[in-house]
Length: 417
Image (cartoon, rainbow, N blue to C red; front, side, top):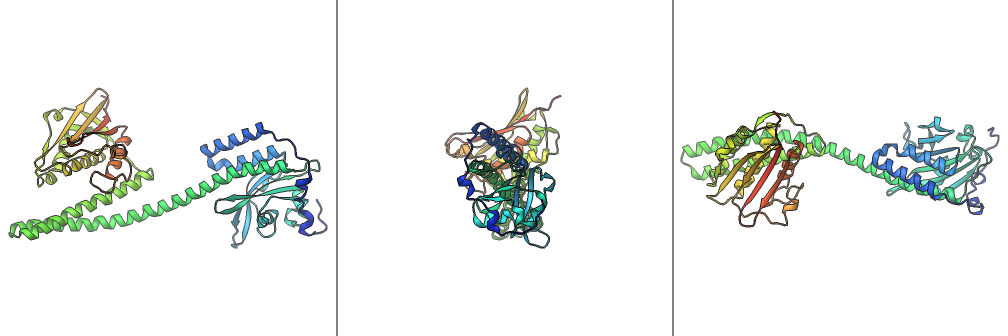
């Protein structure tokens, strides 16, 4: 179209005509089908929603072109509208931009309502090559404010938009705006998680180095105090060692939590003798059990040759957590019993204590993240255990009775052959 005269903005805006024009009857069946398709895309592939949106808008409004323009900034930092999705005659222009301050989209957002334009290139000269007879532009708005615009244009004289087109675009735009907002929130959340993970990685590395020094020196101090007959110093050193050990467990729990949440949990599977691993775990927690006068009972049945396909380090981590908890919740002079049962399809490890049991109201949430422990705690240990066991294809559960102790069961698939 040859634009020979630049006219005033009010000459191209004919929004009042929407109220005067006859409105065609709604096609609810077509609209419902379009909304269902948009909803499916939302669940299946949110990134495809803009393209599906403009295709559906063009079909429902019988337009020559439909588009989604989002607010952005160009290389000079100036605010523009970027054509992120186009369907129809102008589809080749996807990715292009128009100035925020001199475009039908900008005027629409400035006025905060749908705007109808007649031959808009007479005023907005950047549109001159597009040969637009009419353009209907609606604000595309999220919870935090305008995101851009959704629009349809006609390229021939036989198509005129009406109030039904406004209603259809509003319906489609509301759904798409919600998806876009959710995507932006998810992006911000992922960026925040990445920063957090990097922070945890750096800090935990430094903490582990410092804790190693503290632990080593506290152990040496305990030995020195015992040899020098200094019981008070020995008690202080032992408390320091215990606190350092607890802090080390917390650091590792935070790192595991971040890895699980980010989907970065990896297992180095190999052939594992479950009975041997059980005995190693029991020996590892003996220094914790001895001062509390808690006996560790590993029955002869645990010596059977039962093999699982597992990551020995991660499986040992699960057993250490369960055994440590069992020892802490057992009374002085009590017994923690380990058992191993080899079934045709699975191997079941059990850890039973003689503690006070678990409040029935806590049991359903016991393996959830940040669930309160039996005696406080950070609420990560049993959640990490569950994630590790399930990553092996197994399951974890508990049986408890008030005043009669608790038994934790870990079932793992048995290695074939």
